[in-house]
Length: 97
Image (cartoon, rainbow, N blue to C red; front, side, top):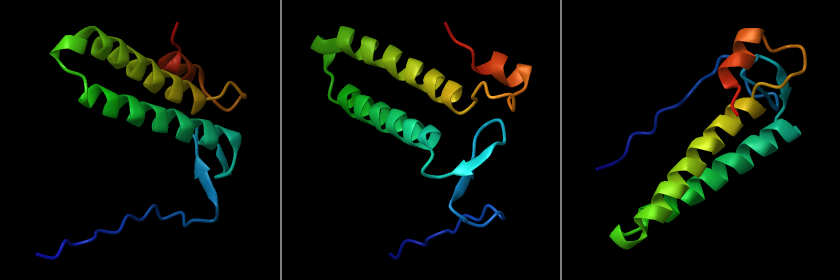
């Protein structure tokens, strides 16, 4: 059968901008979004590598899982810059060692 495509609307329109976690609106070509995209792509590649891990490479899979977790933390920190627009609660939530 035919797959039904659903549309997603943000109600803000696409004027070439997007919003960080702290609600700061920036151009989509901003370094913050480039860093977030690169982090997400790396995480996806690691997920693919984990998919190909076998019982013999279980220690590698465990290391990759930890790296993926840290990349998610890193993405949260990137999306919440210490620029004066992030609240203390937001900064505390994304703080990691």
